[in-house]
Length: 328
Image 1: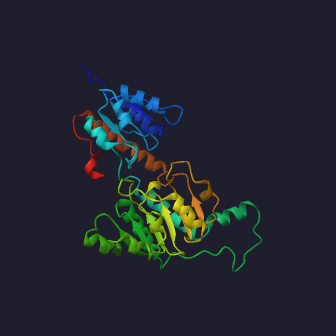
Image 2: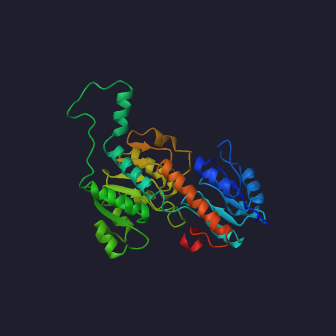
Image 3: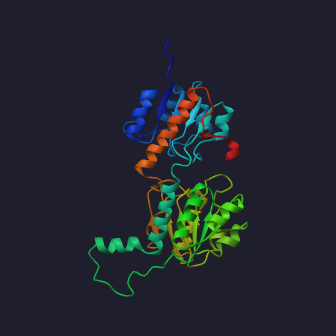
């Protein structure tokens, strides 16, 4: 007698190869067209599924979990960050949560360096000049940026991505500094030639570039608040490819407008896709639409992790990428 397949609901469109493999293994409902589910649609999906495959655009809070059906046993998140899921409430209801760590490390670190260079070398201004047909030819003093070689980089959050950023920045000749919840092991620190700062205040006051690479948790919300942003050198640049909530966006905007911060490269924002309009107007800011992890290879690898987590769960074992509240 054939084993009944798990019922899986996917909330957004995924790469074709991933969707096809999900179809082969499970009873899958795919999302078409690729629009964000309303709360009502999401609640309905959670009532009829054994497994939900959400993304960062799906807010799964305690109220949403209270509407979940008895069938729902696994939330196999398509993404590494799980700050949009109330993991503790899910656990209380007997629902496991998994994620897709590790596969986006290099893509995000690459984009961090790209933003760093875009801000310091004024790449968007050069592009705008060329596209508008305003370039009158080379001039010694035109479009002057600053070099990143020899500058001090302060990494906020030295996990997988933070370390990948450090390796790249070392190749550019930057001096690596970091603040982390826990200090790295000596051999890792030595390999990265990284200087540890227990005091975040002391670190940010001395850096030329700050790279935000920590997750959003209650303890990191507005970690770079108005007071801390005031400590930055007026020549300093901030790059954020992690989570927008780590920075007080209004305070950052004020600092940039006042010339108290030299520039910012942002791929994520405090209020999702609703960006402070004053931030959009600033010439010393490079804004990207949350594309730090946007490579085809990365998206497929994320899907493969989701499939492994669901398949392992279906076979009666703990998903390899299970997330528990103590990890957050």
